[in-house]
Length: 248
Image (cartoon, rainbow, N blue to C red; front, side, top):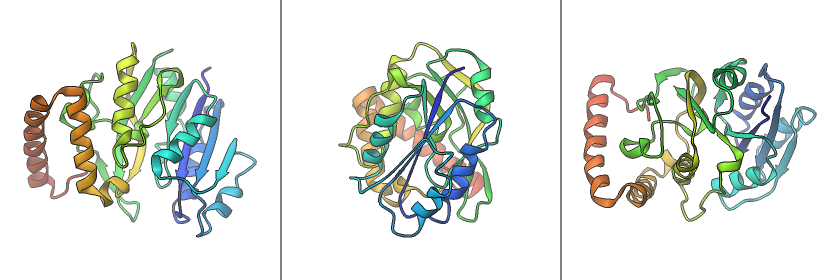
């Protein structure tokens, strides 16, 4: 039975942190290591985390240099066979999710599934605009990040630390690097995560898009990436016309 390390990073999110923690602790799967990395919150977040300290493997609370620095701290402490990031405000989909993921196929390098989006009032917005592809490899992001960070379980032996030169989109670079090393990638064909819309990449949208463009150019080539972004723009416009929201 593989061991899963779930890492939650949080900073001043007293409103949502307990929801996230409960979604991890309520899993029926028994072999989970849970790590919470807090960026020295001052709003009571840490007090909420501490209420669950007997069920959390490791709690770190100290200043960091940003979201990916915090994630790297979590990776450095991880001892599981697989790693999943479930950041504050997001949830593992339901109590059977992790058990279902590992039951879907033994020994994959990467498992991935579908994400349901939620607004600030925790009302469902339905499935992400970027539907998880039937098959996934390192080229699959060329038309956008079609698997969310919360919906991908990666074997720890094929991951590297996040590249801190990217402030908003390093998760894309990180997943592509892992996917290039993976020989067995499994679509679990179920919802695996609930995602709270409006993270850092939304708040710094322009900078995030610039970084994303540079990352895609690095892996897919500049000219193909320019063409792919035309396709991305058309798809986005068409989705918005139909649904009046982007659901990214």
